[in-house]
Amino acid sequence: MKIAQKEKPMNELPVMQEGEGIMLFYPHVPATAIEAVTEVLKSRWIGQGPRVAQFEKEFQEKFAGGGRALAVGSGTDALHLAYILAGLKEGDEVITPVFTCTATTIPFLYMGVNFRFADVDPETLNINVAHVRELVNEKTKAIVCVPYGGLPCDMDELMAIGQEHGIPVIEDAAHALGATYKGKKVGSMADFTMFSFQAIKHITTGDGGMLVLKDPSLATKAERIRWFGIDRSNKQKGNWENDITEVGYKYQMTDIGAAMGLAGLHEFDRTLAHRQGLFKAYKKGLQGADGIKLIGADATDRTHAAWLCTALVERRMDFMNKLRSMKIESGQVHYRNDRYSVLGGRQDDLVHMDAIEENYIVLPLHMHMTEKDVEYICQVIKNGW
Image 1: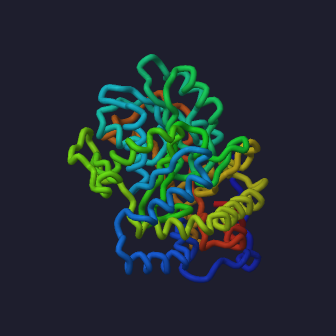
Image 2 (image 1 turned 90 degrees about the vertical axis):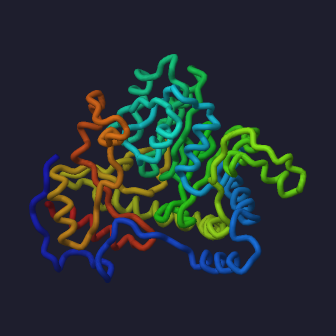
C-alpha cells in the first residue's frame, strides 16, 4: 500500500464537529428511554417483569425469524446460555474465532470446554471457513462465529458444515443487529444467536443481551436456567413444587433495562439507517485513497450493520498519531484471543491473523456523528500520515 504524503492546507479541510473532537464511541440513549425508565422506577416492577416479556416479544417479531427471544443481563450471559443449551459439556471441543471479544471464549473456561481457534478471513476479518473445515473433526460439538463489526459471516457455508457433522452453529452477533445475509436477517439463520445491548451498541439497556433460539421448544429450559433453575412461571402461580433439578444462573434482564431496550427498538430503523449512512460515507470518502483498505466495503451479498468501521493501514501508530493530532480518536477495540495467557497463549497456525495483526484500525462511527464528520476524517486520512 502506498501512503499519501502530501498535506492539504488546513483551510481546505471540511469543518469538524465542535467540541473536544470526534470520539471513537458514544452511547445513544433515546429521549423516550429516559421517560420509560422513570415510569418503571415509579411502578411495582423494577426487576424482571412485564416489560421484559414485551421486549422479548417485539424483538423476536422483528429479528428472530420464527425463533424465540430470551432477554438476559448481558451478551456474555446469552452466550453461556447458548453453550449450555447446545449441550456442550466438560471435555467437549468447539471451533471459535481467534479474533473476537474475549466474551465469546471466556464461558468455555467456566464449562471446561476445549476450544480450537480458527483463523480470520483477510477480506472480512470474520471466521475463515476454509480453516474451520480443516479443524472440524469427530470431537467437534459446535461451531461459533462472529460477524465482526456487523458484517455477516459466510453463513451458508458454516451452516452446511454444521449440518454435515450434526453440530450446532452458534452466532455471537453482538455487533450485527440489523445485518442481513443473502436477504436473511442475522438472528434467523444460526441455531443460537446472541445480541448485545452493552453501553455502546445499536440498542443499549446499559448492559444486557438477547438470545435467539431457532428451536422454540428450548425456551422453557432456557427460562429456568436464566433464573436459578427455578420454574418461575409456576412459582408465581403458587404451584411450584419447591425443587430445583438443574444448575441455574442469575441471568435475567430487568424491567429498567427492558424499558431502555424497547425505546431503542422503536427507533431502531432510524438508528441503523444513520449508522449505515456513515459507513457509506466512509466508503465514498476513502475510495481511491492510498494506504488504506476499508473492511466490508465490497460486500454485495450481505448488508453491514455498521457497528464498527474497520480498515487495514500501514504504519498503524503513525496513522493513529496523525488522527489524534487532528482530534480524531481511533483504536483496535478487539484483539486476537490467543494473546491472553488464560486462553492458552499464542498459536503459530493463524497465518491470516498474523498478517493483519499490526494493520487493522477502527474509525469513529456512532449516532453523535454526521456525514460531515466522516468527510473530515476521510480528508485527514487522504492527506497522508
